[in-house]
Length: 75
Image 1 (cartoon, helix red, strand yellow):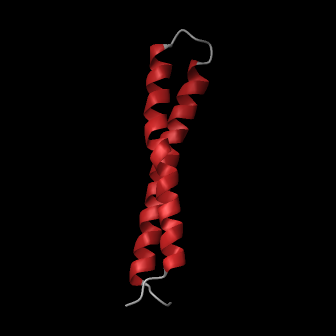
Image 2 (cartoon, one colour):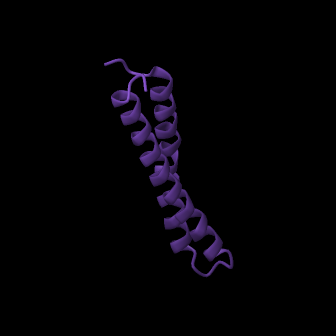
């Protein structure tokens, strides 16, 4: 069963894109909760939640692509 290396590389790119977002999102959310009196509190909190959501999406997409490259083979 051959592995499609192009699709595997694409999945690894998705996972490497999710890695920084896994750290940036919670840091931004924590920073926004520490500065609740700031007028930009809601915007910063939204950016943090968006970063976390994008990290989850990229992880799902990356794992799904890697599994597809391993098991679909030449299809």
